[in-house]
Image (tube, rainbow, N blue to C red):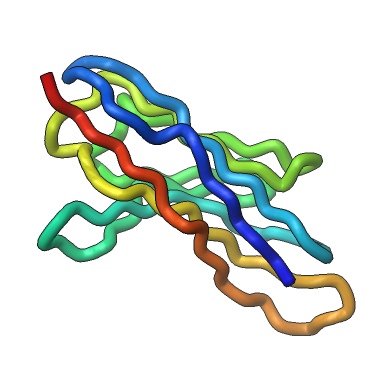
Length: 121
């Protein structure tokens, strides 16, 4: 069984910062990619940022220059540093990971439980 447990959401004023974390646990062999998605009310879930285990990153245009994704491979943890948050960034943020478990051949996608980010004055 693999679990992704995210944390770090909360309420912040416009222009503020938050740091999200998400740790994967279980019988993990390798995690080629980890990332963060978000879903605002009435909108589709969208990719915010992704990172490979070689630290290759990609970002949604709307967050470039404000958000930074990073990971600690030894801890199977991905982070999202969010700076200059704006009301349009408010959403439930979900971590995502493609994981190959020990003893298995397949790579499977896993999701965290979601953490709420509210941006309001």
